[in-house]
Image 1 (cartoon, rainbow, N blue to C red):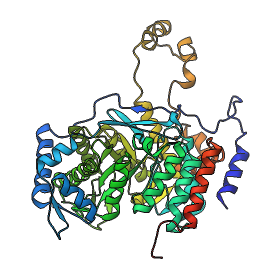
Image 2: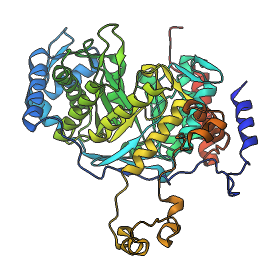
Image 3: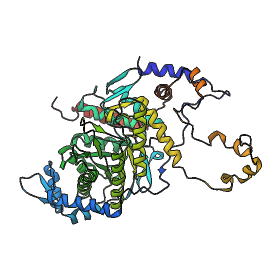
Length: 519
C-alpha cells in the first residue's frame, strides 16, 4: 500500500468524534515560537578543567596540527598566519592566531526562513529543534525498511513543516537515492522551498552544489546577492574527518558559505575508542581542536561570519566497534562541549540520537538521554530532533512521532512557571478546604482544557479499558498518528513569481547536467 493510500484511509477516520462530541483536530500544538532555556546550562566540569581542555587543544593544533587537503584553503590559512609549508598538507596554528580568530565570532545570529514568522535566533539561551538529516534508509511498520526515495523525503518535509516544535528542516531527512546524484540537490532544495517555509540545511558536497544552493536560496527569499551576504538564510554541517583532517568538499563549503555570510556548523565526528581517544577528556580535546580549527578558518575567510560549534562526541561498543548513542559518555561530552562553546561565546549544536533498531524502549530512553544532554548541556540547535533510528542509518515515521512528543514535552517543561496570585490559587485552596477536591472549582473549570500537556502517544487509560481496546502499544499509536497528520498537510504559500524563477533555474541547471559526477 502506498503512502497516498495509507493517508486516504487516515483521512476517512478524521471525522470521528471523541467522547463529548468534539471533532478531533489533526494536530493540537503550541504556536510556532522561539524556545528558550529558562535556567542556566549545567556545568559538568570546573572552569579549570575547561581551561585544561582548551590549552591542550591549542597545544595539539600548534605542535601536531592537522591535514588540510584543499590547496586553496591552505592558502587562506597561510595568508592569515598559519604555519603552511610548501608541498605539505599539514597545517599548524599558533595559539594566538586561533584565539584572535574565534574572538570575532558572533555570539548570536538570526537564521531567516522564507516565512519571517519562522525566523529563529541561534546562541544565548535560545533553543532550536531540527528534523532528522542524512539517513540512507527510512521505515514504517506498514512497509518496513527501504532505501531513501523522493516520496518519503517529501513526506518527512511535510511532517517537519506542519509541526511547530520542529523549528528548522535540518537536512535531507532521508537521502532520495532514486534521484541521480548530479541533480539530487536541485530537487531536494526545490522541495525545501516549496513544501516548507522554514529555514534549512544544505550539504557541502562540492562547489557546484553549494553554488546552486546559494542561488536557489537567494531566489526563494527574493534577495540580491549583496543582501544575502548580510542575511543568514541557510546553514551547512561541516564535518571534520577525525582524527585531524579537513577534506576538500568540506573546505569548499566553508569558503563559499562563509564568504556569503551563511552559517557553517563545524562538527567533528569523534567516537571515543575509534576515531578519538578512549577517554572522554581525550575525545573532547580532539573534538575541540578540530572545531577550533574549522571555526577559525571561517573567520579567516570572512571575519564576523556566523558559525556554530558542533559537538558529536560519543563512544563505540568496544565489543563490536558499533557507534553507541544516548550513553552516559555521550551526555558527558554534550555537557562539556556546551561549556567549551560558552567559553568561546559561540552558538552550540548537539543532537537527539539513539542506536536502537526499532521504536522500542531503547529508542525512547536513549533519545531522552540525548535530548536532556543537549538541553541541559546548553545546546542552541538540536540536530536530528525527530526520526533518528539505527545510529542514523534510518529515519522512521513512527520515531518522528515519538520524538515530536518528546520535544513537545521538553517545550512544556521549559515554559516559565508563574507565581501570580491567580496561579498560587489561595482562594481555590480556601474554597475547597481540608479533604475536598478541586475538580468542580471555578479555578479548575476555567483552566482544565489546557492546564496540562496532552501527550501524543502515552495511553493513560486503566489496564482493563486499555485491554478492551486491543492493548495498543506506542509504536502502533505512532503509526496511526503520522498517517492522520500527514493527511492534513497543507503546502505553505509561495509567490508565483518566485516559483517561476526557481523552476526556471532548476530546469536550466538540469539541462546543463547539474553537478558533475563520475557515474
